[in-house]
Image: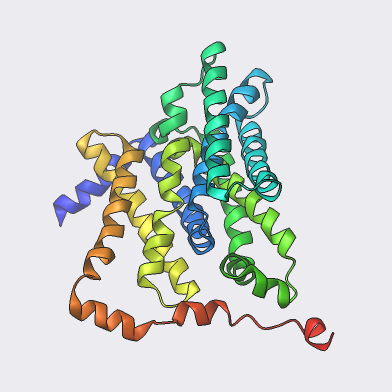
Length: 302
């Protein structure tokens, strides 16, 4: 017990480790909540696209001497809107459009970075620098994370139905177009919040793995949210503490732990007894939960 106590308290004796842990917790909550919607919508690649596409925004924000978060947000939002526009105005499938747009913007960002003198370290941009978080970085990320989390939880029924079945959402009178663009804005903001902690590459894992774990283990959408948040919090807290003792990179270790957590239910599903129990418990439970959104009275009467 004493060894476990020192394992936790020794890293937290340092201010930079305290900031790293708090930042990781903030990022883990907002990313895990959003990951549930991304997984339901099948938009894992969109998270990848937007995260990579913010690189030119960072470069131009530095050149214009404006906050990096602003440049990253508008760059990511431009990527999301461009994907939607190209999808509607071409015969190319959505996944191909995403691949072209985000790889093109990412490459353009790398070109700009090589031509300007900047204090930004490219490796920190790509993979994060959670141990170098400043109080200002934490305040910015905290505000974004709290606002995004509150909005997503408050509108989780509408957003989940829109992600799972947009046709049904339209039939019951939900503002599908507003939900769609609001979803993209929240995605860009969530990636901006996680940028300093895990970078634009590893944030993809934090936007996908928790929701995938929740989908495998939960029977309802609210249960899926709780499982995702708990898995993400465990990964981040454990990753920060273990990285201190092993003297290794923090953000990659967090992602490794999330991948291992995802592997556990996948492997357990191969066990006959567990597979039989799970199939008996939730054949259509999550579907029923999502489709249980009541119709609006004005739409019923109209």
